[in-house]
Amino acid sequence: MKVWEQLERIGVCALAVEWAKANPEKTARELWEQCEWPEWLIWVLIKKSEEEEEQWPFASAVFLVICDIIERYTLQCFIESKYKIEAVTTKEALEVIRTSIHRGSCEDISFPSFPYPLYALEVIDLVWAVTGVGNKNYYTVEADASRSIIHVRNTILASPSNSKSKEDLSKELCDYIRSNVSVPL
Image (cartoon, rainbow, N blue to C red; front, side):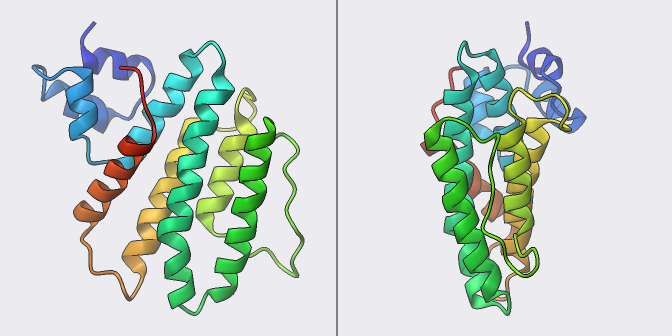
């Protein structure tokens, strides 16, 4: 089976399938290493987790990397902006998510209550993803996890202190994902 057919089978977006079709001589590993769309990498990782005998350990490793990315990239943007309180609530939410992941279940995630919801979109989508593993009532775990990364990128790009282009930032996020999650291809 060709790589683009494998991608189509697991439900990646048409743009990703077309990109793979345009590179028919590349192996799955080569496409993985050359991909510059972090949301695609996250999508594939979550779909790969569904193929694992034990879905949770692999998916939880992906979720922890997303937590790290949110903390590493987004929190600084909040601190530098007028949204400093979002930095506090986002950091606390990430601690709750990490604790739940390490405990082995995120089905009963609950967050500290604040006067009004201040959680960043990155965190909201990550919560939907981690609580949706194995629960088909949610949209899709891979879509929620991918949207989380898209929100991270958009938050950074909107930050006044950002000097990176969308392409450079996407490549940096992809490199971070690839260096922190081992995927069997």
